[in-house]
Image: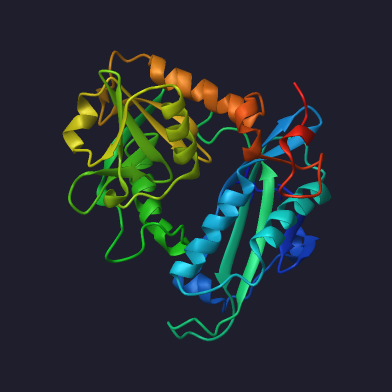
Length: 328
């Protein structure tokens, strides 16, 4: 796993995709005058892939790349490669590294060298893809996360487009996550500008109360999470009532269950919020069901959702028929 300490750091991959070429890890560099380094002018995605037998299955690859393209458009720059070209580059990179383990994939598009003007439309755009072995974001924390409400508010509209997954936005998450870690918590939860529940530093949140699930709507400056979309589809399929609405902070302290969703976090139960125990302090039945069903989807065990998966070693194309995925 990637680490921030240089003495502990070892390259997690042999190759990186950079501007149309697969290059050795140590050659995947950018100049210190890169616009994105100074101003955060970039967009990115986090994508998971799961090892199943001899294959690696990428979860909702095309949906992630489409969202990256849309994020770039919000910041008035176009990607120099098509969505299919980037998607196929992800497959090429995994093959080149000969990965057969669970992976985290990070495509990123950013403004390169072209001056210091804040109008970066004429500055060239670079695209890179990094893939590396990855297991659990929160470790094997089956009992649930101990989280806090951050003193920092979630950035959003009308200041910045909250729906964009932009590099510069995440300094907001760095502040909140660092603050929570210093206080001994596993994660932080943002409120929006109006004081309503928004999201975690890299996750969406769901609350369960009396059999009803509630989750903040887009009006609370949340990211349109792809894991969130998947879990909402599961909730509807299971016949559980769901509301996407404004969620008050006080609801956090009286819910029966709570959980995060996110590419890295997957479906992560929350055990306590601001040191107040959630529900009876045990993993709830709704969270357990959704977590288990999500795991079945990403590993190809749920036939209905095979179209969400892209096989790396079973096909050369991003739009493979589900029948060509490994059978179980």
